[in-house]
Image 1 (tube, rainbow, N blue to C red):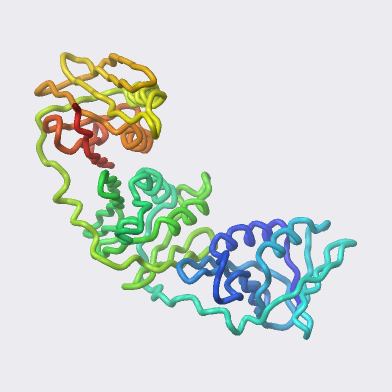
Image 2 (spheres, rainbow, N blue to C red):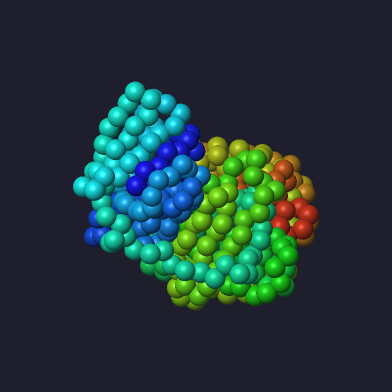
Length: 367
């Protein structure tokens, strides 16, 4: 079995597929990339039993077959080849001979017999969404995904789709992030995708791919994202996701509109006085067209006054500086709207116009 293909395309494919290769597995084959050769094409697959990434390259081929090769050596050796075209030949003793220009080498391969099959998902019906929109939704909400395994369902993001409305939801028990979009898909679909899968998916979306579509296929256990010539296959998280809609306040007593950049800068100044040994809430008072931002720790004290539009009752509330900064940075808007119901109830952030995103975070009790 023999094949040759373009070095640049191959190197890029190896790097992307390697993201799903297992780093330490009881199945040795999963620590490598599976290479499958069929007429005129080569398929590369990385898989760690939770997420798989596969892609197909055009190639000049002789014969058919498959093998598994160490992902690190495969990547480095391919990248350091001297010519633009690389030739691979699998010998009977499971050695892969590699040649490019005046360079020749060989790498020991493994049989693909022990390489598990990727999960199958029906690809007849697709949920379609522009790649740029999907990447933006992930970017706006990923900060609120839980990193604790106490509740595994919260280590992923909910895809809540119904009647042409798509909400991506993340929460960790202290904060909640929702991004809303309209799509053409009208059926109901409700599933939770692991954080790692969404991170790898986002990394495969390039800046100039914004208008290209991502096709999503899902069944009760697995999801496939078809994007830019790659299939990302992932298990879904099991369990019951919190009914996030009941957590969203429908009314408010105070509404504040602030310049987002100014509020971020003020929070960053406060953060200079806060560390693991010196913890304190950021105290914010909203009244009379101003936001008074204060923080005091053994390291020092800061007082800021920012212009703000304040409607309703004056209020003083405590922010967790990190949670506030995560939400403000994720908003990606010039001005932010904050709605409050007193100093001890949930903080709601949203855009000045519409509800493309809704961020909720719990306040910190002030002494």
